[in-house]
Structures are given as structure tokens and as C-alpha cells.
Length: 122
Image (tube, rainbow, N blue to C red; front, top):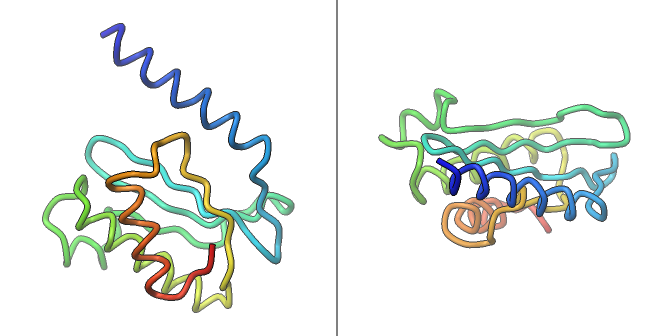
């Protein structure tokens, strides 16, 4: 139990370090990734206005149809494609990527690569 708590606290510390420099504006909002044991979530946030512009997760109906489990790389790709499509629909083309303190590997990398393939620039 103690190792899990230490792992979570370390991720939060890394995320706070990253957030000191990564800031989303109206012209270039921040693409935030959160990973849980069961699902993966992504949202595009305008920090200057304090608003979430676009959100997607494996809990969305569009993702549920295409993936069976929400905690693998295939699910992360589906969320990346969905968030990029929704961003393009709101005329958001460039973002700042906030990996949330996670390593840029596995599910986080799959989400980012899928978003780039659809057309998001970061």
C-alpha cells in the first residue's frame, strides 16, 4: 500500500513541476491526459479563461463502441482520435501537450500519436 501511495505522490510532484512551465492560452490551449487503472481521459483546457474547451474519454459512447477495455493502448488511440476530431470541430489546431506527470510511453504516447495523425499540432 505504501508503494502505491508513494508512486501517486511522485507523479503528482512531477505534474506540478511540469505545470509551472506548461500553460494553455486561447490561441494554444493545453491538452491534458489523465490515466486511471480502468480508463484514460483527455481534455483541452484554456488556462487563461479557466475553461475546458473539449473533453474525451473511454467512457464516451463513441469510444465504448470501438473498444472493449478502457485501459489499453487501443483505447488510448481511440481517445486521441476523438479528442482531435472534437478539437478540429471547434477550430483548435495547435495545443500544448501536458502528459500529467506520466512517462511519454505506452498509453500516453498512443493517445498523442493518434491525435497528431488526425491533425492536432503539438
